[in-house]
Length: 196
Image 1 (cartoon, rainbow, N blue to C red):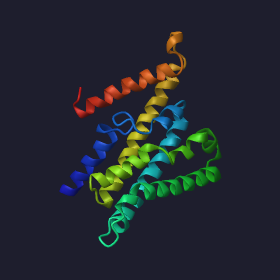
Image 2: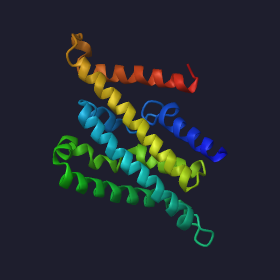
Image 3: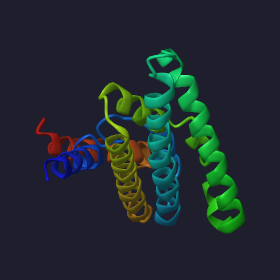
Image 4: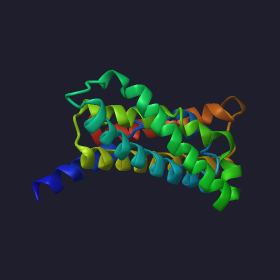
């Protein structure tokens, strides 16, 4: 029961309290680039959930049993190894979407390969190592972080779709209104951590 409670705390903390986009400001490139339509944002969120969850699982195993092995001690290789694992997973997602869901593949465009360099994906893998999570805790943290990313990007897409029809002053049209909206969302999410 205590272990389940700990996993729940990790999950809620990663998804809401320490939201990767709105509290840690990681993964902003796809957040701003793909959040124009809810469908596209949800598709990107699904791809990120898959990649981050699987990357957290695989990198936790590789770190624990290979890199941090007492006989090898190659912890210094973690960043390079993690990037290679993430790149391979993104290639898998890209091939799957191109074959199975070509409309989503086309709408994500250049942002799908950018998941490879999305600092949120690498950030979660490194956070799992820094917080010394075991494989299960690291996977739960990765899944919850990706769910938090999906929540943020879908909320932003919904707001952007509504703002498209609003009468906005010329100085705030386009990206300035998006930045302002993201800032207000970040303030709201900081409320979950008790800062405000």
